[in-house]
Length: 422
Image (cartoon, rainbow, N blue to C red):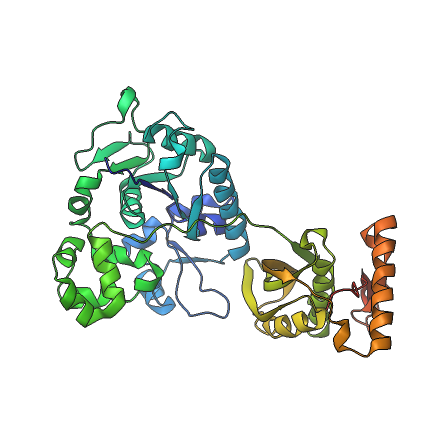
C-alpha cells in the first residue's frame, strides 16, 4: 500500500444537525438550512427527504420552495456549528493527529505518524479515531485528501469497514472498523473513475467548474482524467489542472491547523438593544478582550463579531485589520460598521480574537513628551492595581443608555484601558 495515507473524517449534514440541536427528528422530514442573514438567498444543507424532491445545497430559495412546498427552513447557527466542530477537531488532536479542516463536517489527517502510537497499522488509527468521536462519523482512507473524502462518502456507519480497489485487510487479522472505506493507492484512479464530476464541488476553488464540465458532456471523473493536460490547461486554466490532478488521484499536501488560543468575551443585551447600545456593548467587549491575560501583550490581527438572535439562530462575521493593533479606538472603528449588518434583534453579542499579531510596541515617542509620561505612569498604576487586587481593580463608568428609565441600563463598569498599549 502507498506509504502516504490520508484519513478523512466525515459527518453528513453536520451544519444542519448542529442547527437542529435536540430537534433531530426533523431530519425525517423535508428540511433545509435557511439562507444566512444578509447573504445570498440560497438554502444550506438539506435533509434526505428534501433531496428526494430535488432540493440541493446552494439552490435558490424560490426554486427550493417550488420543488418542495412543505420544505421546513431551519435558522442557521454558525456559532453552534463552530463550537461543535472545534470540539471534534480537539478530540482528533487528542489522539495525536495533526488535523486540516476548511469547513465543518470534514477533517483530514495523515495516518503515517499515528501508526506506531495506535497498534502499528491503519486499522488501529481508525479504531482510535472511532473511540474518540463515537458513532456518527464516517471514515475514508486513501493516498490523497480528495480521494479519501470520496471514500468517506461511500462509507456507511452500520456496515463493516471494507477495502476498495483490491486492498487486502490490515495486517494482524484486525478488520477495518465499521463506517470506514479504505482505497488502495494502486487502485485509487479506478475507484474515482465512475464518480460524478459534481464531487469536485467539495473544493471551494472548484465550485463553478462541474457545471461547465457537464455542459461539455464530461460527467465522470474518469472521463476528466482521460483528457490531455495541455487541452485542459488551455480551456480551464489552473482550476482545470487542479481538477485533473484530483481526478487522477493526486492532491496538494495537507496544511494542519495551529492549536487555537480562544480569547473571547460575550455580553447579554437588554431587549431590543440597538444603535448606541450596540456600539457601547462593542466598546465594552473590546475593552474586556484587550485586558485578558491570554493576550500577553500581543496586538490583534483579526477578530470575529457574532450575535445570537432573540428569535433563534446566530450570525457571525470576521474582520481582518489592515495593521495589527491593540488600540481600542482603531479596533472599534473596524468592527462598528459590522453592527449595521445585524438583520434581527439580538440577545447577546460576542467578540473573539481570530488571530494575534506581533507584540504591541510602546508608541509614546510619537506623542507629546509630557503626555507620553503621564500615559506611561497611568498604565503602570493600572497594572499594579490589577496585580494586587485582580482584573476588576481598575474600572471606569461607561454610558450605555443614559436616557433609560432603568438605572441598571444607564451605565456599566468596563475595564480601564491599559495605557501601555498603543
